[in-house]
Image (cartoon, rainbow, N blue to C red; front, side, top):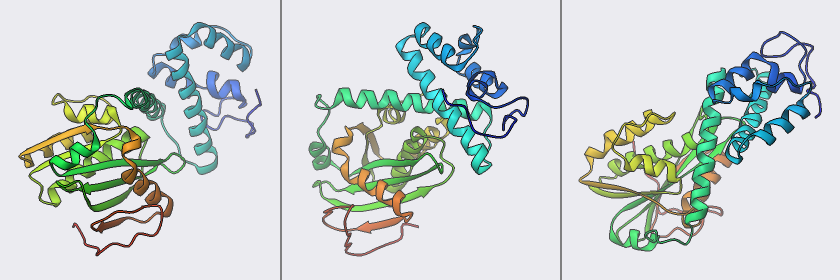
Length: 286
């Protein structure tokens, strides 16, 4: 494995020369991260170099453990680069939370793939029954930013409004999706809906919103905020749909993150968020 080109000393601990084996194995911060993730066992064998260590980890770990290990490996490197090139420092605990969030998001993505084409309530039937807000979150790992895309449909299934919001200091796609769900819940109140379906393609976030028990995960505070707003509705439901059926919210969030411009639009027909948008008029929700 190629050595890390850096200063003589590790940018995190400053204790010794920084090569790839030090970054991922010897550095005290790396050891703390592996411990937070219950991966202390990968440090129990003596290794002379990165390659022999990696070979041993992949021979000993289960498929799930190897997947989590790769996620940790990637985010340790990402945060090392943020410290070196952007002077942005994260604690071992913060990095381990990011890793856990990514793992949960990967699990949610796998569930979405398995559920495409299954007997989930179709989007059309959801729209024709009552008001609905579809949400999606686009995430920028490099800058820790996200954009929430919210698309509002009426009881006839017609898209009548769309709103996008930019967010700073977002730790992971998992957190970004939870924030978008909170934005959707607030938007329904601002629009005066008494009954509402909130629909998204992050199964993990939707499941947490459906539950009434206290959530103890890293997005627990956001889920708690969503739960506290439920009483302002006569009835509110949360539904999962595949990403392929959430195209408008997806495109809106992606375009907003790309351009760095928030928007709120009201219109009768939504042709495309990727081309020129010609709203009937703009309003402020504040």
